[in-house]
Image (spheres, rainbow, N blue to C red):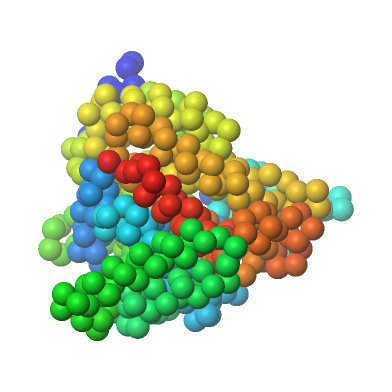
Length: 461
């Protein structure tokens, strides 16, 4: 049977928030106490939604604009949020860096920047192995704080459904702070410019960064001269959306409701949810769940992605070809992106499907340092970003944006950048429980270098 025929059959079968339970599932924890799991699911289903359907629809329109080259997407945040980082400083630092980056990218691209945080729900992570072994002791792997604990003990590694409830309340707290900051002084474009100037002052050896910030400052001065007040809503407020991988399906189902206005199902755990490289099987549980919720959704596209599989997923998840519904997140690695991405891009383009493409330059560039810590090299990360945009420029198609694992904190998890971090520096502040993140300074440097590249050779159509 041709893949498209099977895909059409799946897309036309009856759906409910629980039909995923009859499909094969990967990366799912096994809960010993089913009664406790069901009790938590029932409580979560009664709790208020974390986001609204109207917000998800607004984001969908923004992503549709990015697919046409009329907007640029900046998505970033932690590999996996930790319950221990549930503090105002951690949230504020990452939010501030994302806004600083977005100001640079908006100046370079001359289009609005859509800001999406890997925040307020990115508590679960897929793992390459179901178990972990240390000193002859084998235990279940750590799957993220919403599932089990990081400590290497049998008790901590036992999946606990009560963690889903903790995750919900922490996500609500983070969202509350994000909404306040998006409408306060934190989002004021003049304040963002001052922060960027301070950043440039710390990097005196890179005059091009100062040049870019001077140009942005001149633009703000011109706007004021034209009567745009510094305290106007256009300069003081911003839209900010949340996202996470829809991995833990009992949690996602519990927060899925019918929107009273449209009569459609939405996953109210986040505005944007994505399906990972390990769980995108067309007949699997995660695809089954995602096909029925009306949120904008992402699909990770890696080196193992086949063209027929990708086209099947587009048919299953977006049979009406709704603009802004699907975002494809390329994660090829710097050494493979220029070779492996073009055939996939060409096939999707020839299919006539409307999608938005983002570059995830993190996951394909993970290595193990000499001290056994996982890391990523700044140069590899940036090279994949440039390779991604080169592919789109050669194809004459608009590239949508970038998707980064990053933090506003001064961690030492990725090597390189203007700080010249090496393997020896990694243990100094290696704080991630999962994958290494760009720190605040490295994230800003990515934005400056990309902005410079976009100005010199426009890569967005």
